[in-house]
Image 1 (cartoon, helix red, strand yellow):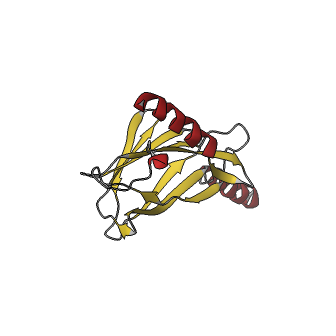
Image 2: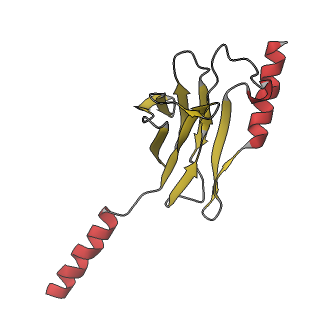
Length: 154
């Protein structure tokens, strides 16, 4: 009887404390190789403000996101062009797991000369491929959004 009770408690504990899927986004925010402190990071989860944070003195940041949602992560600082990253953590196949993605951000000053126009608009997308591959940066999305931006700019 004690053995049965012990197994029940262990089983219940493992289910209760089972790790749900998480993505850790981490990196640094820079401008021309100079790390930027106090950049505001806003995370929107399914279009509602989920959390607000800021970069450390060395420009570093770390954000934990649950799997199963769509996020918009925005980096902003006065006198700099805001940059937003769509992060799609929904996947029909992957419900659990621990994923890490290194995402370094380059912010440009509003009046900065020599800004390469191919990096504008400041938008990109990450999405979950599968358990083995993890997350990937969607270059097609960046190309598409750049084309849309050029049409608006003309």
